[in-house]
Image (cartoon, rainbow, N blue to C red; front, side, top):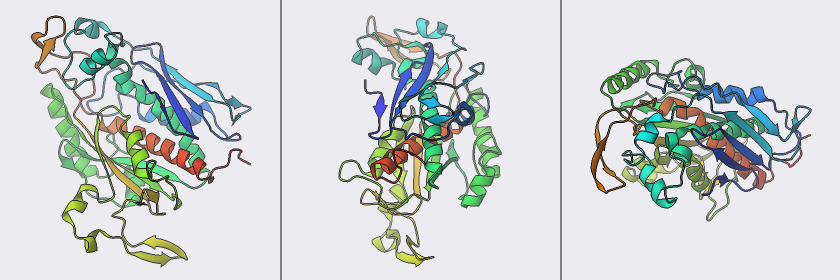
Length: 364
C-alpha cells in the first residue's frame, strides 16, 4: 500500500473504517503557521454524516479532532503534524456475515486478492469513505496555509442523479454554498436533487453526481512538467477519494466538440496583469498554472452499498450467490464529498507552492 502523497507538503493517511481511529501525518508544513484544533474541526464538521438527505446514519461519530504533534504555543513547529479522530459508532456485524460474498461495486474482491485475505474488511477498511476524514484534516491545514498567500479553494455540487444545477457566478456560489444540505448553489435544482435522492433511497438504490472545484488567485507558474503536471497531480489526489470515477479540467470533454477558435483562450491585459478572456483551459496550460482560476469537475459513482439484491459469487466455493447490503450507507455521497474535493485540491496546490518557493519554510 502507498498511503502517502506529496513531495514538500506530504501527507500520510492511516486508520480503517472500523478500526480504532483514522488520522493523518503532515510533513513539510512551514513553521510559524497559527493553527488550532478548531481550525481543523470546522472543516471536518462539513463532511460529517446526518447533514444531507440520504446520508449514512452512522451519526454518533463525534469526529472530534485531536492534534497529537507538531504544534507548540499555537503555531506549527516545522515538525510532523499528526491529527486523528477516534471511531466510536462502529457496527461490524453485517460485514462478518458477508465476508465471503464480495459486494458488487466495492473493493472487497480486489482487496481480498491483493492482500491475501488479510485486509480489514469491516466497513470497507482502508477502502471506505471513512478515510476521507484524514483528507479533510490535512486539507484544513493546507487551506489555512494557502490562505496566508491569498489562494482560495471552493467546491460545490453541480449535478446529482442526472439533475444539473444552473451555472452560477462566483458570488452566488459563495453565498449559497452552505445554505442548503446538498452544498449546491442552485436552490431550484437542489429541491429536485433531494427528491431524486429520496426516491432512490425508497427504492433501495443510490445515485451519483458531479462536484465542481475551483482554486482562486493561484499564481502563474505552478506545476512541474513533464510528469508532475498540475492536472496530473490534482487528478492523482482526487482519485484517492473513494467513489471517484472521472475528472475534467476547464471545458473538459466538451473541448472534443469545439474548434480551436472556440476553445482557445485569448490573452488580454486587465489591471496591468496578463489574463485570458475565457477559461476553457481551466487555469492550466502545458501542465502549468496560467494565473486564471483552476477549475475541475469530479464524477462520483452511485454508492455501491444498496439494499436491492445483487448477484455475486461465494469466495469459498466460487459458486453463484447473492447479497443484499444492510447497514448504514449514504444513498448519495456527493454533498459530503464537497469538502473532500476542496481538501485534496488544497493539499496539491500547497505542495506545488512550496516547490515553487512561493511559500517559505518559515512564516514570519
